[in-house]
Length: 259
Ligand code: PAF
Image (cartoon, rainbow, N blue to C red; front, side):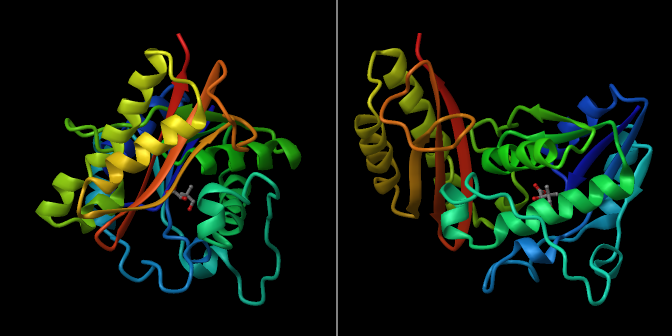
């Protein structure tokens, strides 16, 4: 079996955990490609960390068999005019703030799946909307592979690992713990019996507002599969956040469960 871990490189422990999980397939392929079509104008495409030699050494250490690092021309042949668009699921959350982002993600993931032809592909739950978009695309296009979701890996203070954490100054890095603090507070509220979206989202916004370096872009309570807003947790819902810490936009989410 072949397992694919699609990445944009600048590996951290989150990526390495996907690669370790993918070792359940006999052969592990990791792609490293900073995909231009998923970045909007004014976003960090040029600045995104590119560390291929370091990434190759880390991949080798965790037992990756093939590191696939295509060029932009390999993925987007000159004159190409085909894109993959997943509707509905991409309208809210990050999709509402990053127009075209998920079109770029769905397109590059479809291409990587076609090129590598894996049996399984591994995605982190930190990019929750991306995971659902990829699942939907694979289902709708009848791509014969299994999507494996892997848990978010966190720093000791709760900050979800992300290549963009490297942009944070020491002060911002300290402030960034506010995302996971807001999520775990919401989970504690749910366990104590608060189920309503209004109460949970109000408290989330208060926690983010109390951190001077943080600016909330969105906090939403959504259904885990459809990603549509829900009025209460029900048996399960996902609390999803996007927060600017200084100039750096970070996302995180937590599946809230009653009981
Ligand atoms: O999550 C990422 O690193 C990227 O969005 C992905 C899935 C590799 C597509 O470029």
